[in-house]
Amino acid sequence: MRILLTNDDGIHAEGLDVLEDIARHFSDDIWVIAPEVEQSGKSRAVTLTEPVRVRQMDEKKFAVRGTPTDCVMIAVLELMKDNLPDLVLSGVNRGQNIAEDTTYSGTVAGAMCGMQHGVRSIALSQSRGFQFPGSLPWDTARHWGKKVLGPLLETSWPDDVIMNVNFPDRAIDEVTGVEVTRQGFRDENIIRAEQREDLRGDTYFWIGYRGKLSDPPQGTDLKAIYEGRVSVSPLHVDLTHEDTLQSFKSDLAGVWEK
Image (cartoon, rainbow, N blue to C red; front, side, top):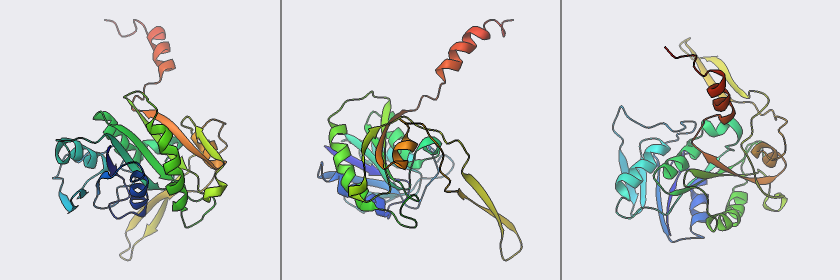
């Protein structure tokens, strides 16, 4: 099995080394094509207004001056076009990608791009900030990544779906299990912008997250991570809200007719 690895934390990220360790449990044919510099929060951005430069670091390792989506596109359209990957693994991200965060996530976007090009794809993220302030239990991702991926790779799912895997920030033996979940939504906005002033008197902002927990229902990715379980969520690109679509078809029928 040929596996393509990418991420949004950059080619030198510790989580990418963890991901390679996980991947080598399943295959020796590993390609790494990841951003030259960190691309967190870039979502599905594609670089269209400037050249995307690629630097080869090893036989099967490339650093791309672009986004995670750029990396996967260049991989399947050029660098690996003669022998495409069987699987795309994106991560392991430094921090959780759950709830509404998934729409910002470059990690999830890398997997989405793989799916878009017909390759089974999985995003993996290591949660942080709940039990291990200032550090991440990478051994948890390494251990549970191998345990979770095995059954997933033996399971089929629709071609337009990716798997979003999040590991709780707990020690290996404190993880309470694995749960198939749906994407949650926080009951409070945790994004904040902090205004500061530089040494020349000009204003700038840092955008980041507050650590406040929400109160999610059972069955969500949020609840699973809060309670120490690995979360496995099937996601797809289609953002259509079906209930509203059907009600609008009925309620607005004929409204825009001439």
